[in-house]
Amino acid sequence: MKNRHRREIRLGKNLVLSILNKEPTAKDKLIDFYDCYIREMATDPVYGSDGDLTGYYIDNDLAQELREALSGSLPALREVLIKKHFTNRPVVVVLTDLAK
Image 1 (cartoon, rainbow, N blue to C red):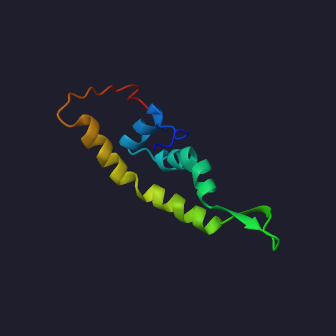
Image 2: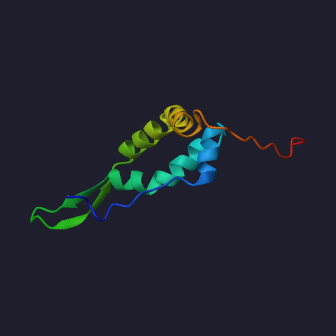
Image 3: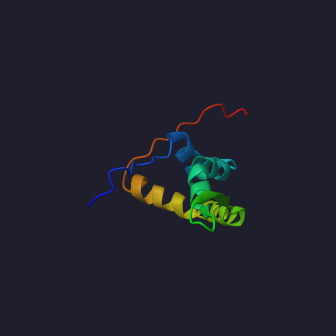
């Protein structure tokens, strides 16, 4: 049975272009995009001795490890994007404002 609540998350075109162009800000943009998911994965419920939920604990070390793993995946992500979308297809390159 499929999870009906699951929705497809797509990176925005500007973020994809940043990754493809190896922009210095691409890593930070990607981490910002996934930050709410990283925080959710690093959060655990805390239960009292009576078994009732008393709050949540955010494991900041785990969140940092997830951010580092995500940023380390950029070269592989770039390679997959290029192979999947640009192999055997014409590519148009637009150059603007070269005077910068």
